[in-house]
Length: 258
Image 1: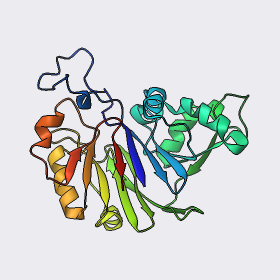
Image 2: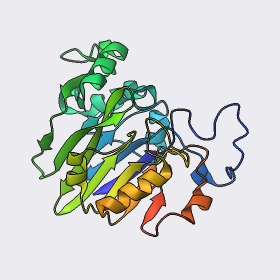
Image 3: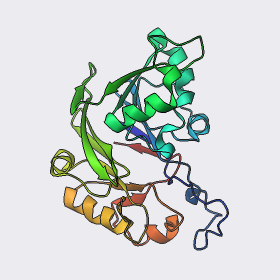
Image 4: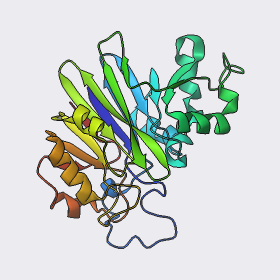
C-alpha cells in the first residue's frame, strides 16, 4: 500500500489568511498545508479520501491521474468542495461514473452541493457523475483489498474512519474526530500505520489535540503514526522533537509505503 498525503491542513488552511501565524516557520515548506485529503494506491486500485478546495492543485502536484473509488469522511466544506474536480476522473472511467461512498450526512451534503452529478450518466461529456452509495461497515474488492468503516464523533455530526487491509498489512485513517469508538479501536489494533486527527496542542471540542492523538496511537499499538489536520500551532520541526520516534507530523505531498 502506498499512501500519499495530498493535504494535511485544517478548514482554514495553514498559514491562515489575515493572521501573523507567529510560532510557525514559514520558510519550511512542511508548514504550508492545504486542506486534508489522502490518496491510497493498493493492489492496482486508486482510492481517494476526501476532496477539499485545493483538490485539483493537489492532484497536479502529487501526479494523481486516476481514481477508482472515492471515500468521503464527512460533508464539511474542507473535505467536500473539491469533488467537482472528480469530473476529469469520471471522464476516464468506464461508464464515466465515479463510485462515491459516504455516510448519511455526507450523502445529504453531496446531494445539496452537487445535484447535477447524481444522474445515471454525466449530463454531458466533461461533467462529474457520482454513483453515490451509503458506506457499509465492510467492503471487499476483487483484488483482495478490505475496507472497514466506522462512524466517529465529530461535534454535531459523525465522520467516517477507515481501516484498510491488504496482503497482511493494515492502515487506519481516522481524521476529523474527537475520540475513537470501541469498534474503531478493535479494527485498528496493531496497525502498520495509523493516521490521526492531531489538530493543535490545546484541547478542542470536536477534534483530538496532538497530545490526545499521541496517546491514542500508543493505545492502538501502531507501528507508525502520522498526525494530520494540523493548525498553525503545530510547527513541523518543533513538534517533531517532542513526539514519539515512531510518529511524524504529516506534510503535504508526503508518500508513505506500508
